[in-house]
Length: 451
Image (cartoon, rainbow, N blue to C red; front, side, top):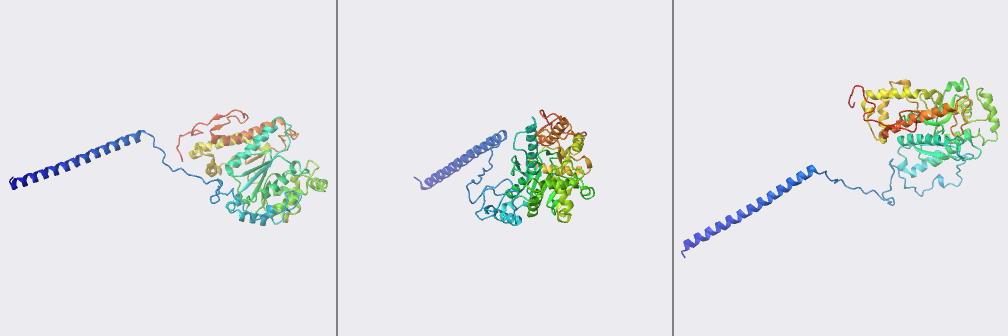
């Protein structure tokens, strides 16, 4: 074969094979590219018409048995740790009894908080609400139901504002009955709750009628006891009604321990109980009964030992720390309408929200409440003299008036909670029926949007 021809044929075959190889590679690439493009298009259409799956990470919470990661409560306090370091709880001489004093309570509390540092943050505003009722069932046929609703009211308030609640239905001292029964309970609560700065006693027949209002604790920073009262009635008229001891806020400190002991020693636990009744009756001309009572006892201490007690006790009269029910049940309807008028004008006050953020909406409302003055909801309504459990109401009240007034107050307060859950009592005297709250309630008159 001619070498030149052979070279030409070899060269031609090489070029042909080269072209065939690259042509084949190009076709393969185009095939896969087209296939990939088709897959992308299919996936895109599928994603568009199909809900996106949840790719968020799943969190694993620490085990309750974990020593390195102890479980904490929603308030950031460690409920799983109680160090072995000795505290006042390990002192065999410590007594919860109202008859035995507690010494150096401030130091004991401080030491306990040092061993439980997670409770130290926010301790200054921590409150334990204490209330209770008699050990036996009520004589009044509807008494136990009313007590249940009154307790539910307190639980509702504390759930919104982060207070702990202790309900007691036992006599912690056999002699300390009736209005004196609270003192052994309050002392025991102080010892049981060293993490709390305040113990808040609220009588069983008192209820919250402004579920949004929050105690102005900053106002009481230099005081150890807060009670509803009027100095002019104490020092100018020495009146038995110059304060009401059915609701009080007491600081968890040594001063308060000493006060409770002194205060209680005018009660049935004292050998001079009858004598104290005579002293109080001679001092307060408007006192209606001969027995020594807690209210007269506190007024006596303020009057006779003003230098010792007055600067430490805040007589709250700027709002209804506790208000007399006879003066208040007639204002609920008008107050409700005033609040609705406010909400019709301010859309953010109408906005539905989670119960856990209710305090934020209370703060919103406070900006506008300053303009309403006396139309603010009464904070606490106290049904003094109605005796819901025994039914032995004060003779100057009609029993039906007490009963209807209590139902009205309970439903007035309950509506403030029920609304968060989407319902309302349309009639404050009808506890059995509710209606669903429509969206954007109450309907604005001019249809404005969120402000």
